[in-house]
Length: 65
Image 1 (cartoon, rainbow, N blue to C red):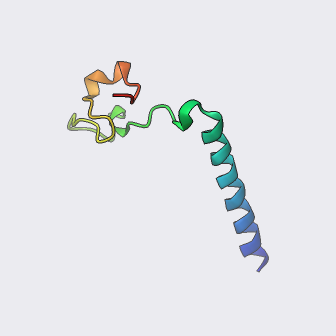
Image 2 (tube, rainbow, N blue to C red):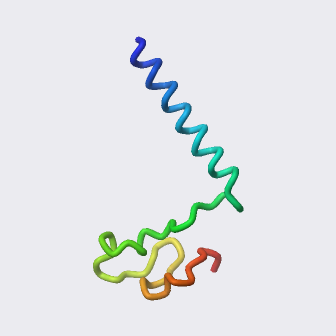
């Protein structure tokens, strides 16, 4: 029972921490949300599913199309 309580407290602190980070960010957005920027995840140079840009267009990626 103590382990479950500790787990719930730690998860609660994580959720609060992420919420504060989102609240403190301008427009509540994280930078670099496009997974296609990572060459290990995008080996076939496909466009991003989030913003639609190709890997060579990420120099000016601000996710506000």
